[in-house]
Image 1 (cartoon, rainbow, N blue to C red):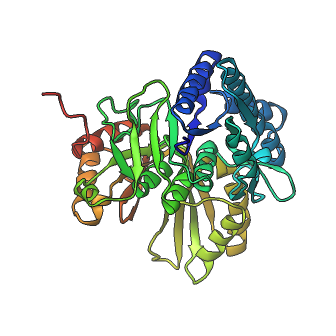
Image 2: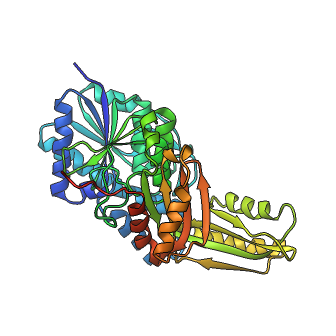
Image 3: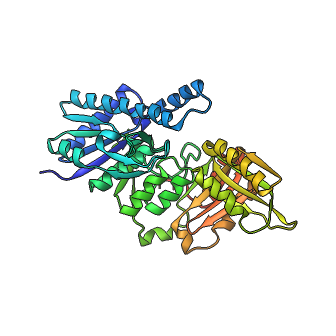
Length: 410
């Protein structure tokens, strides 16, 4: 008797070489033997995407986004085919499929497309005959049959979308760490693995620099209540469950600390202080599909004001093009760019019912002489822009100030 469907996603480090691919195949086959139908989503072999981006950069300084999608989508095709071969060697029937073959339909935003629809017909047909279905993550096809990719970490989005449409029992995300930690364990040696975390907290951590999950995938998982388990490819121990918020979670003031180091700060100087100028700036940035994050506008004392905002480094070139046009239009005096920043954040749903988080965070930073350039808050997070060189020591200091480290064994 079949127990239902499990979706398993394996990241690039999990399939970095033939030995690891064989290890993944054994894990997948073991899950199949327990009576589950298995759909596997695989990323490109570790380092492949970066190599392809580098290769494109050696050909063109500004490659067309459509052609980048054509190029980058090939990485996952290698992975799925090799994993299917490894399963065949274990006498387990399996089939590898591209996003287009599955029927993952996206919009036309090349390099960061959004999924519009997922067909289950082909998937269910192959599952019915006992095959493990291996799907290339990170990719789909738009309505014009053009290949698209889902942005960095897009394989997470593929896995969550498949788990949702297939009504999977569980979506397992396999990575090179044992679960979700209170901070990056490579920076904070005594960071503690969490047994569980809410969708909302995980979404915030992912969007603020935690690399365990893609933020957009957490948005969908939370919206549709997709059961998720983040765990290690190299261990059989339980990882971290991502679940709906439960009352006990509110007792924890801060769940995690993270730093995002791939951001840039843009400051437009001497913007005329009159209604509509800010909206003109950000409308044009939105039309260029640039994701603006923190925004600070100084109080005007001279009929002109400075507006600062942060964008991902990957969008900085596009931002510069848009901003150079807009400052001429609105009559601003100048613009500055700073890539030497990081965004430090604390996250926890306990902030809704507890005060003093900001004071404790700022005190910890002051003790380490870390200067704060911008501040932004929401119900469950506080973020500060600081200098990139201070990021690691700031994470360690704030993590310690909230007592998030591992408790010593008795």
